[in-house]
Length: 343
Image (spheres, one colour):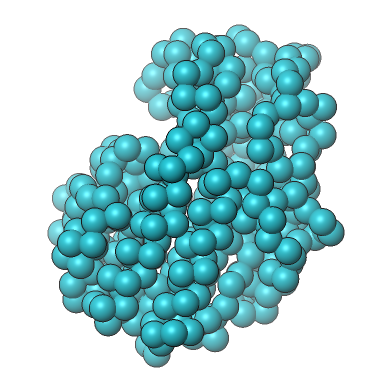
């Protein structure tokens, strides 16, 4: 299999979203593909995320739903490589479990079947550390048990299984990538897509205190989106990774309380004390990666220092063209009920 992405026709589902748009950036900036076709509903993604490539003839945006077999067949006609990132998020799954499952599980099956029938030479299925549930041992390698705690995690695990089935049953070259918690520019602070790092930055920039749920000692493995995009490309260009399921993360375990301290210092408000609220439903207690398999296969290692990445993201929010008050209007104290309580 030719593993070089130069000269390839590439499809990126969810390519107008947070991680997807950074992957598109890296493909068009660092490689020479013949074309990159983005498939996105623009529910969470935006055309603005792709604006720097608006005049690049290599980029095509198709506004379509991955659950539509016809749309997937049309998008993948003639494609060489498919990166599948389109999904609905973990908090969305708490108030809309059936829709979340339909997109994340059934949509992944549709993507896999369309890729099989189009004869693509590689499918990179982008899963999530949420398939694991909370750590039963740490650091977490690829053989760690998968006990997801939400419908989102369950749907992502089903999508993984379908991708592995495409490889084992039909011979479609496929790789499953499991990024841990990704952060960086274009990350979501709003609605049921909003996560703790951008939400906390927006709160602090607005003069409000950050929010911790439960005791604040939950931990995550935070990876900068540039490292995530680089890791996905490294996997796609590694012939030995075909058929593998591979973790991507930093191996650095950060508690939610410590995270709030790092963000508060970056904003210039180190004295602020977080507000504590009850535990969130379906919240994983502990995540930290063992990424040795990824490094063995590809030589990839994360490059962005956590504190520097947080400081850069604070600067990005300050320069985004929206006032702190305007940003804060999108943030809610709860973002999982479907009728969020304003912060």
